[in-house]
Length: 179
Ligand code: IMP
Ligand code: MG
Image 1 (cartoon, rainbow, N blue to C red):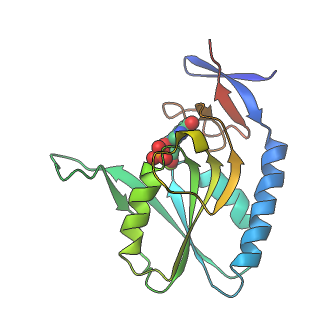
Image 2 (image 1 turned 180 degrees about the vertical axis):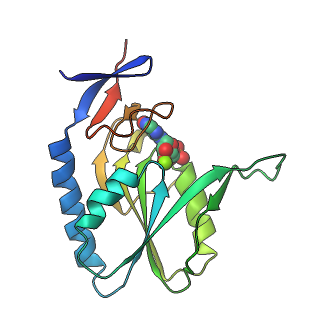
């Protein structure tokens, strides 16, 4: 079984680059069909979704706009209970069909917070497409609209996902080896 070393940990191959290519094409076809005539705005969640987004968007054939956003931790003393701040959003979302592209939905807390925030911007329609989804790890009632792969509750690297900043460039998805 193929393994890779990322920093101090070993990971084993879970989803091959070929499986990813095939599945991403299927998702693109579904989105092309569902979003026809809606002029969607794709919001790419950096850093993790960069590779998934690049592959998926190459196969989107309907007119669309693409923007890149990032969740950044608040600096300084913020005791409002909110952990993150959305940066990079320049476009107006009012009356737009918005499709968020995410690398992975784990607990779902990031996505729930983001959706709350985007709903206040009066979007017409709001969808989430994620490369990976861990159904066993979810802590909210959120479910993505488009899912590349449902995976067990394991730690992954590759295809945009990182371990301590490393491993994002791997073309396949690997899972943390249990000792
Ligand atoms: P959530 O808020 O728990 O759903 O997690 C959101 C973020 O945590 C994702 O966008 C990833 O950046 C990161 N994350 C969750 N699971 C993994 C993993 O298995 N490997 C690498 N990053 C992960
Ligand atoms: Mg992420």
